[in-house]
Length: 457
Image 1 (tube, helix red, strand yellow):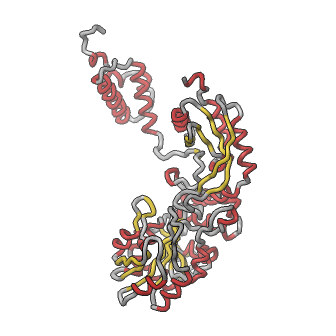
Image 2: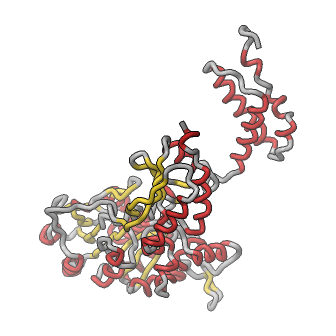
Image 3: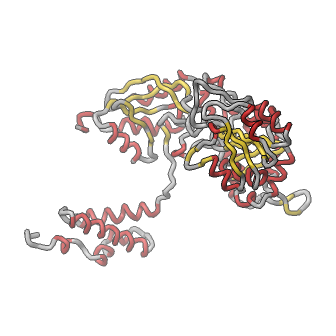
């Protein structure tokens, strides 16, 4: 091409690129092929406008084929979580147990008695499939599950408190995450927020002074993703229950994380447990299914039979109901608790309970064959997911010392399957505690494929 030649003329036409044998043999639908060709040529023209040389024909063909492969690949993909954050919100929170996955497949592969009473031969309710299990594992009189905890709280407040006031400690009128703010949810439900106390100290008398003939409930909100320490005060849950019931009010408890196991046995601070709220006498407790419960995304409401019956009949219940596969997965997860096998069968609890020596042994196996200096260093696997803020369990990390750790991390993300690591003080860190042992071979192979220092410079 001469210096005065128009570089755009070096680019092939749409029809010429479409006629290339490799593209014609791709077997994709013609409309998708044409879209990929047009997109590739548009990118090439944009590059030429910036002063770059026109891509060679072979390069353009490969770009079209790459785009076609991208069209067919699902956007939602499995990844390996080596970050050390057990409930990683961006990575899908709790992985499901084998039993939960099998239950989803069984429920989804054909028809089921989702809303059919087999004994009576008439229409049934999808909510019956979980209620007995929820009663068994929490001790509550009744229970219902919807599609997430935000909708569970919105539903409970709409059904029980619309048009009336709900008293909340000022320190608990919080934003939990993703824009979920307690004041906004109360407003959307039709209830009126009444804040009492201060950010760090709210006393029982503050709640009592705010009660009026317009009050419907007292709401306790667990500060699941932050912690206030120092000069603080808040009434015990039992005191709030007694105060609410003495005035004919409801006590609602937003627990957030859905913890059914005492976290102190793993060296962590105590997380409020659902069973404790039920025992204290709360009218309705709300919690998530995909956090410390270790199941699918869900919002669970348990408590006394009368308020749960009102909630079940509310029109919003249908709008936020769970689908059949999620019901199946949540049922299988709750069965693990009912059988006393949560620590061995639910992945997040297996991760938390994994012995430190076993975690270290896996890190050392990953380090074999690393093309760079590799160290085993102490660390902490964080719980994450809006649960147990700043809390974690001791772990051992594989630290890889590379001259370009960010580029190495990007390379791991670009693999199949993608591996998500983290960088700290110029080292690439991988935590075995949050990786399924079945994926160890993938991680070890990916570590061995990393560029050695001499090649990266």
